[in-house]
Image (cartoon, rainbow, N blue to C red; front, top):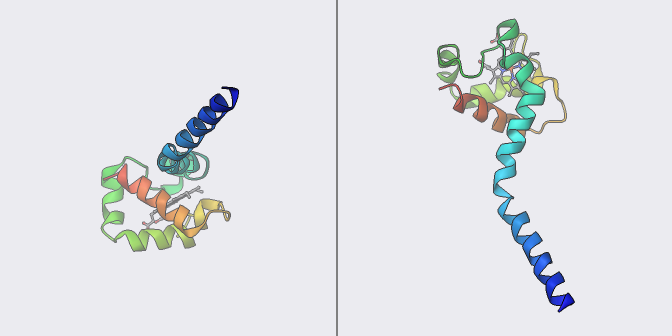
Length: 105
Ligand code: HEC
């Protein structure tokens, strides 16, 4: 019986781990946004387009996502490459751009 319980607990742990696997990405993106991009894009400091400011983002979104990805990865004017976090992978930066754009259009 003890073994069965242990097995059930293990199964439950595995199931919750896999069902949580889809969501963490979004949570991770949001967390990375807060720690890396929010400082400038939350307030619009130094001319950064403020997240949620549709008018501010419109001309940028019009350039197309690939252009925005490139700016975010390589930096543009006062925008540091990868938001100043060299540990971010290209895909992570792109996900952050998607996140910001989704909130701003
Ligand atoms: C030190 C402040 C700062 C941080 C941190 C920062 N940005 Fe920016 N970002 C800017 C500024 C300033 C601009 C406007 C640049 C310009 O003059 O066009 C900008 C512009 C952008 C643009 C629009 C680029 C374009 O081509 O129009 C994107 C996309 C962007 N940032 C993404 C990010 C992401 C993603 C992060 C976090 C990984 C981030 N930024 C972190 C300051 C920052």
